Image 1 (cartoon, rainbow, N blue to C red):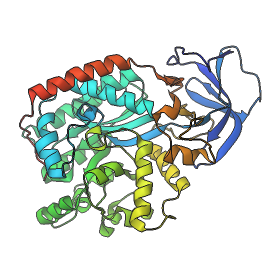
Image 2: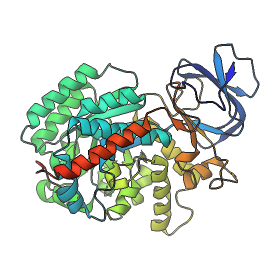
Image 3: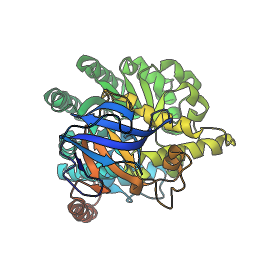
Image 4: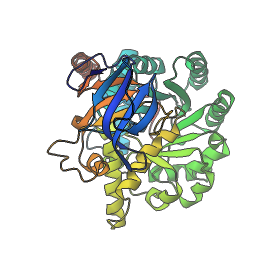
Length: 446
């Protein structure tokens, strides 16, 4: 065996690995100290006390005696390509953010812009220990190409605006795209992606529900982000957004609810076991989206965390979102006992259940999607419990290694992507976007 603890190698080749003498963090927050993890063909094949058995010659090893190892982090809702807009829409309310800034600039995006923005966003996620994400965007062929190139896991929902004049053609194109690519890679899955109830009138939302049902797809969409959306649905349909979506069969399929901050008590009847909310607390605070009903109802809702796009959250660090959620929950409840650390960690890791990849389980036979944390730094040390350090103190510099499917995408603190080239291209694109200016969007926010 060769030890790679102090060298930068071709870690993104799939090899057999022995992570030696680690402190393993399980999905419930409990610890396995002095533990060896054996990884073969992208799968965890053995979890045993350190020193149990000798690895064959084809295994390579990393000494993890200074490190902690957890499952990778899931990001349940992200518009990855919007990394290209990071910082373009600041200090704006929702109407300004959507209608004056984001939608007009998005209307002039090219496929190349989306490809670059997606790769840049994936690089940021890998850097922060994210190993699987649920994307909701257009130019889905570019998003898929970026995912394949970067080696991360992804669940892709091509965005559908039901009020767009070419909706039927767009739906047909998405159907063809999913059929053509759904078996391309075991690391990629697909969902139907209606944008939201307020951008999808009844005829369109019914067609999307039929599409998802006929193709055996889950659904990923925005629901009840703000009070104004709930008010609009009541004015249009005399019901809440959740009730409206249920009427047209949306909840007959597994649903990933982006946000749902303004869920109401009466909406809980429509939620199924396979309905999961993606909570993005930083966006709610930044856009002043209000308190909503989620914090009152959360104990009866299945939820994990997303980052939304970097145009609203400014980072794609899902651990930061979990941190801000926990702090916001304590603040709103005026109770420091709310949202205890291990509970938040369990919801963060529980987000893996939104996907069909079998990830997020620290057990033999599970996919080897892992993060190796180095918490030996002034801002995370001393470590009384690693989960506390990760949730409340850590940042991307503490993610030493990120592994997906047995391949390292970040190795010994270095991303195995050409980051300098990505940033150079991103700067060129930023300048081009500003020079091009905003266009005229075909859709509007409320």
